[in-house]
Length: 306
Image (cartoon, rainbow, N blue to C red):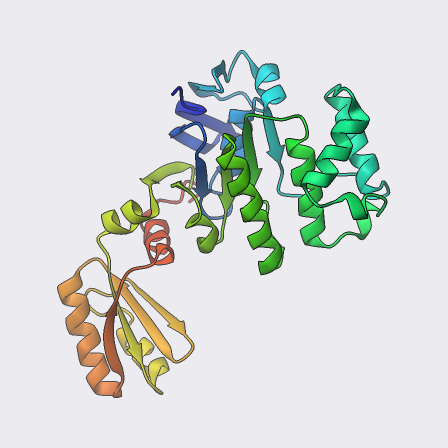
């Protein structure tokens, strides 16, 4: 099948600074693709170029078969874009906001489309509630309803669950997987590792450059990391001793345990073993996590603003 997104060499500059630097990405139809990276890494700018909201300074590509340079209006009609910030009228009700969006897309019959969307997203009982009075989770659900009401073929979601509680995040992702099962393609940027693990494939961007792509299993395997865990009552001292030792790239405390990560497995094991004996902590080996991989990638990336 033709990919839903296929872009090559995207570049965007603002005021002499390169914010997106030679980004190429392919998202297959029906796929949930994660887009990860630190704040200021270029995720939002890349998404806006794909949506037809920004013109790239260099590069080319197609979204849903439309050229991103020439066919911005056609792309907008077939894409649902959910921004980072809640962008609806807070002094209007849920239903009034959706009626407004239905008018923008000239949906007909608008009343039925809005009613069906309210029912699909579980919003019917709250349709007369002011948008400004909604919790973060319900605001998110309203934003998703507005994104899918015109039956787009592609959803682009820019950090949609920021500030939302874990239950609402899980319900949101259940909705996303249901939509994808129906053939919708989804590109979602997120900071949450548990959300990244729910994507079919992930793309990691750092300082404007795409530095890794693949499934979660591929990303972890290709990183070539070793992780050991130290447990005991003196992990604070163990952490102090481990920092800067041979083979140790990362040290992260989790309660009474300490995760020690590095690329040189042999050197890491020697250093961790010596510190474990010195601090009377128990040492076990663990599988590297996706978070370990991303911290490693971020540390190795070159800051384009430096």
